[in-house]
Image 1: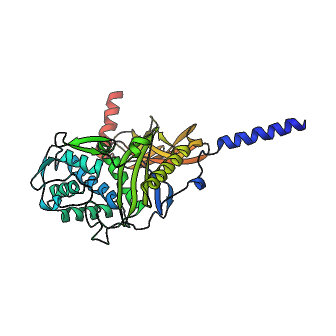
Image 2: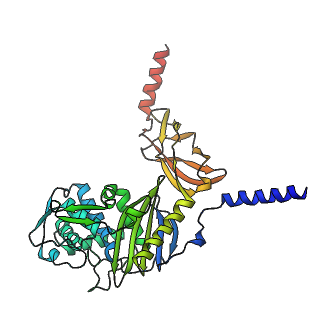
Image 3: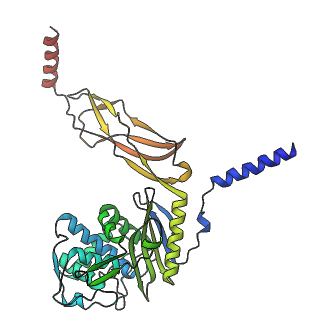
Length: 380
């Protein structure tokens, strides 16, 4: 009997261990002074360390440069096929570059490749000048966009992150995650470039090799931007996706590129081991009665939504609709008339508003009389 009890206790211990996360929060070894791990679709922060500390971002700055460039492309302001003429200023940039010459012309798309893949400082300035007319005007838009995104600890002085002559070009791990999320969620075409390991420009004459080694050596890595100066240390905004879970790992101030990449891998491992992204499906039948309207019934709509949950709660999800049986007219399309609640057991995981799918006008006296008379004569 004693042996049976021992076996049961042993089996229970095994079951408890199997239910535990594969990588715990406390076990992540962070080899950088400032980091943050974010899930991209929801913006939920899964791990952070000194995430609001203002630091030099080096070439991770170019995430914002790319964001504004892709906004210009998607709005029709510029086209990928447009030819960019290189200025004296752009050609004079040092650091990582593709050695643009004054007066040289290169397409917007090839300039983007140069910025994304090999972190070309000269191409970043050339793009900025093409989009806004001057780098200073582009930098003004960078700072305005930072405010719009809620990047509270950010100030940009240039488009490429060179910091040998500036002291106020600063941002934080959280702010980098915010602009990275905006870029990859709103402009996912950028991932077509950030996943390139090697490419060429100038008709094959100049080879580009990705500075982000995770693209080649980490399963699921799909971006985004590295950076290094003597002031900044080794930085990265790294992105990776597995099983529908898109993560953003920001590392700032690592001592070496190896420590930067190892820390990014550890953050990704933690995220993928412990979390899942679940898509909530909207209920199909959201009809409701209308009081005092020109119609007696209308319907609501609810956009699909999702949430990051611990892996143990990713299955067996349920939902319930909470909506008044009768809604008083007038009703305007988009009015909130209820909500859908998503649950794991009794725990609420998330809520999505139910919106009126159409306008419903209030029944006025003349229309009501016409309806009554119409019904009367139809019966007669």
